[in-house]
Amino acid sequence: MKKIGKTKVFAVTTVFSVLAYVWMYIVLMDEEVKPYEAWITLALFPVLIGLALIADKMSGSAEKIDPAATLPVMNTLEFIEVLKNDTPEEKMAPAEFKRMTTLKTFLKTEMGTDNINEVNLTVLKEKVEGAAVTKKGDYRKAFGSLVQGKRIKLDKGEAFSNEQNFASHLQKAMRHPTHGFHSLNFTVSEACKQVKVVVLNKVSGASEVGIRTKDKTAKAGKDYHAITEDKQKLIFGEKEDEQDVYINIVDDNQWTEDREFSIELFDLKTGVAFE
Image (cartoon, rainbow, N blue to C red; front, side, top):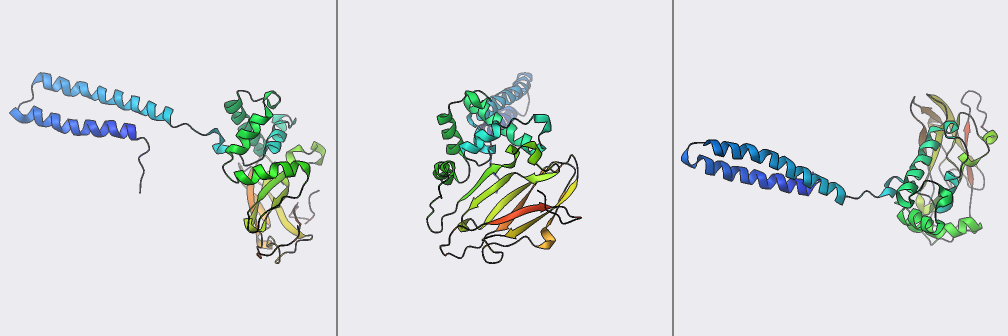
């Protein structure tokens, strides 16, 4: 099924189509097309184009684009951390630069400035967390707990997912030069079923890197599904800045204490994990 995008333009063309048949019937009633009838027919064509253009402009102004549509799901603290990153733009990884540009565009559109130091943080919190496309309620609830280091209380079966500690905020000497994670910590409930890990390609071109999971208090097969050997090799194309890796979480519908497992990148030739 197809949908009509701009009904105003459709209405104009529909009305003129009907009138065209009526006008043709009137003109041919005497089986002769008089000069003035031909000129009227010709003149109606630019009228149709003009009215359709006006209708199109009216439709465009009425369809306001939500500036939050491309905004990554994050809380206000993470939003601020990204924009306070003092790494020169020319030294940023493409994915980091793209993320910062998106946030600056949002800030300029919503707050009138792309300088995070000039905005009202209360208003910013409302716009960022109130406009998030996914998990709005979860992020609002978690904001205070994450800042204060409290454990988040969740109801049974409640889905919750959050990223913390952007890798871009590490000191330059602590970042790996070729590959890395977008975020260093993830908090998810079992009800989420899976966690998405974004792996960054910092090389200007094609590259390869290994990724694997390691047990801590969480055990593979019981609490989560480890990345199998056939999926541990990530291949980045020439213009590919990042890849998403999904790790399935086991939901046994039972209450358990917080458990952890780690995810690491490693050199495919040596098998040595990146620091």
